[in-house]
Length: 220
Image (cartoon, one colour):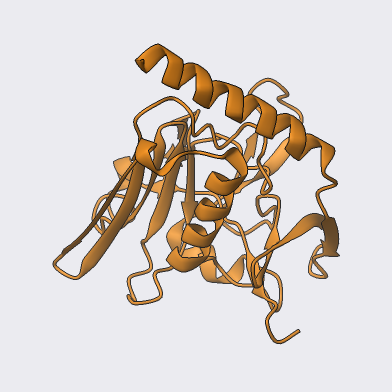
């Protein structure tokens, strides 16, 4: 029975991937007037997302590139204190609601059954943590369908590239002033959390993450 269930889920994901590839994904385009760089955009719910990592150069940003295409720039890693200056005008850093809306959208596209999802939520000392893990290897957020074109480019720690195969990205929590919230995303699931020390204050563990930007469209 377990084998048949896995086979059924795999078939659904395969057919859904074919269907998705046949549907014209409606990408737009915007140009960052600060440096002339152009980004793909995509509308999801009431939010316009940049479908690429930010490539705006800041004083302490570091380039990251495809590991199999070393000359292709795919954005920068940023320290937390430079994040407020990264997004173009009218855009902002995604918050936890934005990411949860996108995750729901992604699960619907991938036709992943709710029985395969183990969700968790906790609040310790005012620091909320939200996460979801998948009991089968079916999430695969970096494979089609992948509307935001997310890539597992890891992050840097003390200047070294680490955690390749996952995506680590700065975000905000709409109910917290803490600037250190971030999203970890890999094939097994995702987690939204903060741990204030070491990732921003200890030199040997100083981390820099990717940045995506969004724009509210409900009033536009």
